[in-house]
Length: 281
Image 1 (cartoon, helix red, strand yellow):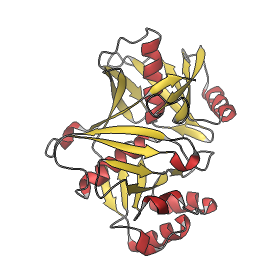
Image 2 (tube, rainbow, N blue to C red):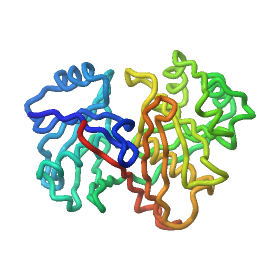
Image 3 (cartoon, helix red, strand yellow):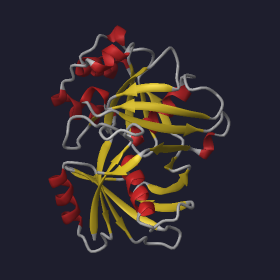
């Protein structure tokens, strides 16, 4: 059993930024309570790599934030697969990972790990809750562009399109109301975003999780995947196969870059692929 802290989704060539993920290899003898305690002490989303419970998978992974276990975590999965590859425990060929949210496929493409996510389920949030979201984020209703969406691949994220990067980066969030608001939304986090120009494929976003044990996340792969599908739903992501870039963590001083590869219009059943840089810390 070994632990390595891996930085995931940092900008290419940067020594800072991204989202740290403690990766525990050979964690089969650890109890759930021990995994939760190690995560609490680290203060980061953590992944524990175990032997699979079926022959259909090569690895099993469990994910924790300081307050609870999660079904799946995008950046932690990429970090774990990167570390397994770096240590010669995975050859980079397509691999099936067993998670509580189902099977996640992994592959190594041009020096970068990619993981699969299914097509998102997307629903429009009602006006009364949008008003609550505006109050929670400290913005005017007029600064929210178009419909607010609940979008889910592995978990529901609430996508809030803001009118500018300036509004996004100067939010005055009422952090004390996030959890109760997310409960009413049926969401695991608020994900306000703004387009870097008049249209994609570069977007900046911030993640305020419902109940993780920290107020903001520097890089959230699951939310980025949900956002990419939300943009496709609003015809802001293009119809052809698209590699979209989601920038996150900028307001925290930990800039991150998440790639989401969407399928061409009509091939949505294939799902999408998350990708990003990873390196040992």
